[in-house]
Image (cartoon, rainbow, N blue to C red; front, side, top):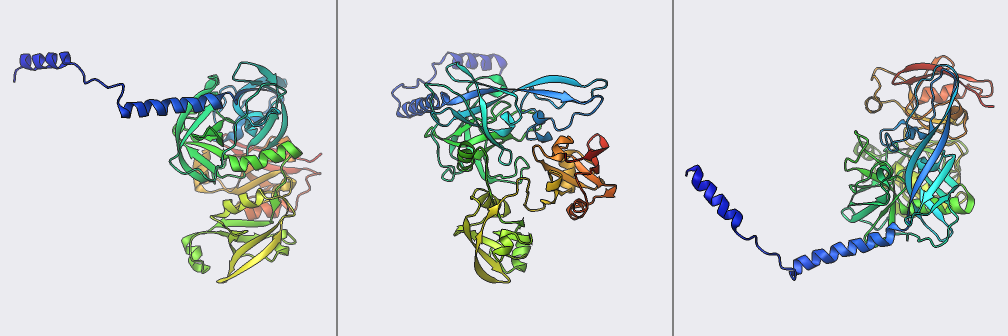
Length: 480
């Protein structure tokens, strides 16, 4: 077949009329109806989504490293570049400096009084907060309350004629359901993206203390933080919080705080200005197949009690090390984080029933929850012994070394949380740093950290050797 013939055939094919698509085709009409229905959902929900602009004054020490930058997004890869205008500052020789940083996020109007649900990392450390509505009006906002442990916050504006976003039920959503994210990525106001629920119950992400994230592939980018994830009923089912990214932009994995968790936090922030959490006083770890077999548990589920604090609510209620907690008030417990979330979202002084397995026998224990210490921290592999310093740590593993860019030969404990207004926060510590020494005593693991902390007096000052990706530095932590 020669080239001329092939060319002739190609020309004839181009001249042939394309098959017509009938405008009355049932299939096309269905697509059009779906498209218009989706547009109706967006139109109804967009008006309840706001653009949040924040401003923070940063003061650096003369010639020193600026640690504990609240706009550093916890030095965590999930938050890196979440706000294009917020960057951790480096070295400043000479005189102290003062400068301003700006950032942007999103939020949802949740009631007619002007309360707006957003992320703590968007507004928690801001000096000034401006809110722009869908209709272009702008208002100064004030913080009603923040909860760093879930990375949620509530702010308020005084405005008339506002539209609110109805609440959905995040427990009822299913993997594969269509969801819509609305926010202000890169300052592009009220951008809409669509995807599905990719997974539920994501935890151990080191994004917040209490994690039960909805994972979605709806595009979420810097500036989407705090905005809503809505279902096809136009109801908010999640608060967009973080992305997994190696580039700073969308890579198909975003995380939202389930609205059922967010609502419990939000209601307390609005009514009391703070969140009170139930507390058991135990350290937990997840079950494994080997542990389940050794402890005579039928399935690889539940939460294993690794330690019970003396005179804690758990101790007084009869919990013992080695107990496997299977149910809380009849609700199956999936893992340690699930139990932690259930207890943390229950009010102090509440009596709960725990079904446990102890040496092969089932027991039901009635426990009256205490109040979670203001700077407490209790979860698998973590400790609340650092509360005097105002930080929480976990054992440093090769996986964490790779994640945070450290040499695997380094020994110490990883700082996972620094509590606001604590001695550690004032000294400039932040998550992602390593504690290598306390008062010139080497720290190799959590047990060593606990033992060293028990001997310190923060009022007199604690000498600590801190490691970062750039090297080591001695600091003094002192209370008062």
